[in-house]
Image (cartoon, rainbow, N blue to C red):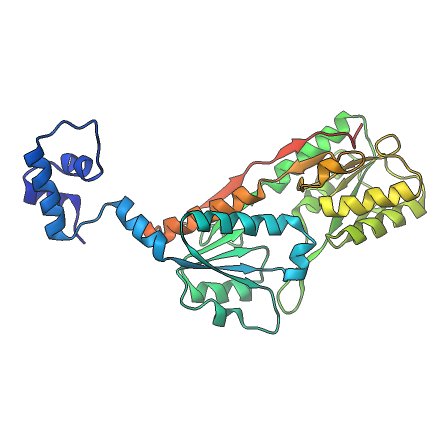
Length: 333
């Protein structure tokens, strides 16, 4: 492959001068004759700048988005929908063709992932599925999941740090009994259960504070109906915790509805803190205090990582951690 040194030697200039001329550095003062020699040498040797290579590569790229949700499941969870939209927006800006594949246990995804320049995998996957993706493309990025940070690029958030911030906030408001409402997720054909890192951090934190109560932990699916049903169970037990962390805003919608029907006021009687900051969170009654996740930005970041793999042939894996923000509204006191 032609290098800047090759061009510099042919044009009788330094590599630094050749680089600045080829990259149109307007601050460089050099004779027109010298510029002409450099451009002629580059043309003769077939050299293209990194910017030119990336521009050409972006136009012809075709990537696959493999989604661990079905289309129906995605509609019910704006979190993953927003990540996918972030990927598609970034690809549209860079003129990258996108092929989206939703989870379907009856279809072999490897057949649909052939002849692609790279793959972005949204969500959680089994070891078998990961190996399958890796055989289809060496350019592989995971979003909201980091199966092996030494091998695969990933874009994630720090659930542990976020949960500690959330629980410290509730303790700071004076709550000593804090409940947890979350979901269980499964991967692969054998439906292997994944324990949520939010749940793990909650348990560890509460035990260290000597205020953990197993009876205040409720687990279902990340859906409004499950939030509703789980809160109904808690209400039936009586003596509710004074606050609940709810692991998704979608679940929190159902939680608040169940409390409303039982004439239990938020936040007067029970404080509710959600997770995701979906668009409807600020329009709930009361507006929901929640953790903002920059989901579209996560998707766009994944595209950037994939382009580095494709265009620069980067071999070392990157793990990008996107920060979160606690959005304080009116559902906690």
